[in-house]
Image (cartoon, rainbow, N blue to C red):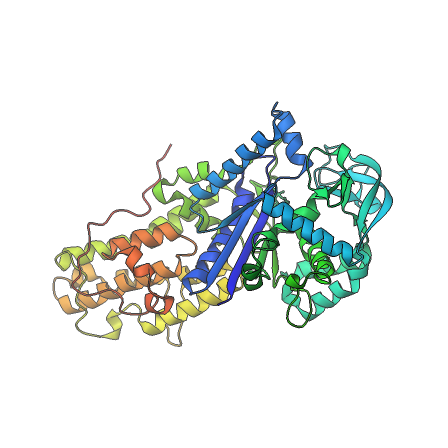
Length: 539
Ligand code: ME8
């Protein structure tokens, strides 16, 4: 069985995680969960990019001098955030680890043997903020437009260079032959233009004496490997490159690199060029036809601002995602996950506002979903002796959803999620989807169905009909709960338990059994309901 392999960028540890990092990581986690629940074996990786001067600067600014202690502490801080975030099973890579160093050395040697690494004199302007040399056209008023407060360093050194220029045509062909390699479409045009006009050989090492961190160039201790060359290799390190050939053969290539649009050039141009180069001398990186095994898809999402402003340390507006979630009770992380995935069309830029998070919580979660579940459970318990009602008659007018309805929902949800459009997948669950007649099987329609059929009145005269109505609502909630699991795993657990089932037992079933009509047993006990999304404290 092929492993589905999804990655996040490895983040710099010059700061603690903020909501932007959480965004990419949550999308990756949702994708990992989505594939896992559909039966795939999944490798999901994240980690930290440690061999960067940015980290050293941050340490110095914090008044510390012990780099290893600083890196250890920061790696722990990132791990702790992700564990509070309830990330599913994942690999966490540190680029100071011995395995990574071994992988980088092997990769470097392979590229060297391919004749793509050579020495040359270099003179240029370096931006530590970007960890990249800047070309003349990229500099404005002597400064990097992305980091206008930082001085550019003027560097003249004899360095190792990577022969990027000889991969220009191969890259253009890659974008042509496999358009899905760079998603979304707008980014593909951007990267194509960049490669066509600007992708030139560049320096992939620096003098060791001018850096505090970095992996030494194999065979030349006077130089250290450029941090991006090192960082990109993390994706093969976690898959077993250099440590476990069998695992690597099974896992590589990655199915999906998720990144922000800021680092698309590195992922869509440098990285495949590096792989094509090293593959010439390393069979582990080649497929059966002798071609380099390249990642299947790089998806670059947009950037978001906070209340209209760029997230920045100097503005002090970076939001700690775990702190933010605390304002939404014991399912707070799920609330934030829902918001991040629902509110921003994936791929586009967006804006984060606490006000809109609150609105979505109240409207989508508390008033629509929570209310539906609570009313359905409470009425069932009240009229059916604390149990799931017996659905005796099968009058269609009294059934909110059915096999057809949940099948249609699942199909639409899966298609959107496969395309990474969790925003549309979730919208479908709330707004429903038609199946040819006038019915739409959405959460909003389910609430309306209660108002239309009035089971609270019908219970006085027609228990059969009341049972059919309530059973269909409970069973519908159960199905929706399994569909949203990749996005709100804790909420799924809570719903399944409110319906009197064991989450862990159910989770062993495959998705076709979970999302199908009739999984809830009539007559089984319904525990005392608890409010899933309680009213917010005013204050
Ligand atoms: O670039 N909106 O690390 P980094 C959306 N170490 N996403 C955001 C964001 C925002 N405002 N801010 C950050 C690096 N991100 C390198 C990566 S990979 C081999 C090396 C997310 O700590 C987004 O995914 O600067 C972006 O690409 C990433 O954080 C940059 O993280």
